[in-house]
Each structure stands twice: as C-alpha cells, then as structure tokens.
Image 1: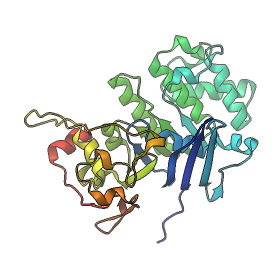
Image 2: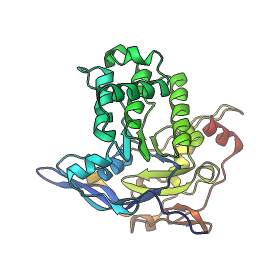
Image 3: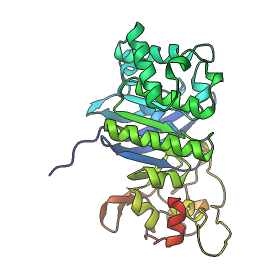
Image 4: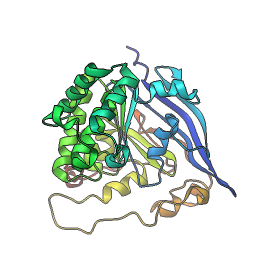
Length: 338
C-alpha cells in the first residue's frame, strides 16, 4: 500500500540574511516532511535553524531575508505566495505558537477581544457566536471560569495560563498543522507536563499534525514519533524517535544524548560537546561539526556529507562520512525518557 503524501513537504529550503556589508546563509537546503496526525520533533542547539525553518516556510522573516527552495501544503506551493493568500494559511491551516506567550499577546486588549479577532479572521465568526466559541476554546484548554476570563487582560494571567490562551488562539482557525516553538520554556515542570498533555490530546482528537521545536530531549522522547536533528542550518539526522535514543548515528546526536544525566547507577560527570555553534558567516569547510567532533578526520573538512540511510533503514538517515550507530545504555535511554 502506497504511503500517503505528506501534509507539508519542505525541499531544499535555503535562507540568506543580507546586511550592509555581507550576506550570510542561515539554512543550507533543508529537507523535511510531516504527515497528518504525526508528531515531529526538531532538536539542536540555539542557532541551528530550527525556528527559522518554519518562519521561512510561513513567510514570517524580515525583509532582509532571501528564501529559496520549495514548501508545499497538500501538494500546493506556498513559498512566495502573495500576502493575502498567506494570511489565509497562517493561523488557518497552519498555526504557530512562539516561545514567550506574553510577548505574543497584546497587553492593551482583553483576551476575549484577541480570541474573537482570530475567529473573525479565520472562521468568519462575529458577535455572540464568536464570543461563545472563544469561551468554548478557553474551556477546552483548561482555563476555568472561561466566560469571566474573556474580559481580563494578559497581565492578569500566569505564564502557564497565557500559554493556554495562545494554544486556544492557535486552535481558533482549526489548523491542520500546529508548530510549537519551545512551548514550555518559561514554565515550571508541573505546568510543562500539563501543556504537553494538552497538546497531545488536541492532536489526537483533531488528527492534527504537530511540530515540537525544543532543546528538551526528554520532552521529545515522550511526545514525538520522529525526530529531526539540526546543526548549522542543516538536517544531520532524521529518524524515528526510538532509533534516535537507542541507536544515534551522527556524532552530534550522540553528543546531545551523552549530556543527559542517568537516572540510575553511579554518579558520573556529564559530557558536554566542546566549543559552540559557529556563526553562519564563519562556518568551517566541509562538515560544519568537524571542529567539535571527536571522530573527525581530514576527510570531513573536504565536503559536506549528504543524508544517507543508516544500516539500510529507509526511515533512519544521517549525514556523516564515518557513520556507525551507537547503541545507548539502558540507563542513558531511561534518562532521556524521563
């Protein structure tokens, strides 16, 4: 039986940022896809291109960004669409939740006004009908006394409540894909778990695709079916979640997992990846991970490796010239799953 076509297909996505004196490439031919109902995790250090990939896809970058490649939604190209057509897609078919909910909400308007504005834009609901639907959305995301709280302002909500409001606004357009960019960064552990459970419940009941952009490997291991690891604007590993944590193939992925603490066994010093992510305009020749890689050779500096199958598995691909999967211990895997 043929596999269903992906809901979103990103192909050879490149992004260049221009300044007065130079142009720097932030994304180098990113390729990834997501299907209906799937949960995809995107991980990597700050500056690896995780957020830029989706902001470029939705036309949300500043005027000094030049975007190339292809982004299709249900097989139709959306990259470079005129603003009116993009506005129908953004918030409608594809919604995005950003890291800081407080900065995404307008402090001068009541929550109800902001929710009903989204409903008017994406579902053509107005007046009492929009107000009733806004109340239903707040109730669905777990905000008690929804009718009363529609009349309150963002500063009257906690960080976790504001994030729930942002999720409600994202759901106002009944999206087919929800992109959550570090949705629990500023929240305590208990509220994080509640927000993640809420997102997973909503995905299941709506058959909605979900992209989780995160630094938290534990969250990714619990929430996702597939993971894309990014480094310096490139995809370096694309694999089912279980294979990523049990048999990581790329040295960068191994480094991320090695930094996770074990739940059981003797105490050990966590192993950090040496160095930092290089800026886009100062990438080393060849594989960009070469200066930080413990297994790098002279060959690595000669060319950028392409994604290829790991042990002949079509669903597990990595970009390394010296690729050999590493089997992770049970303790380390348990630490990732916590």
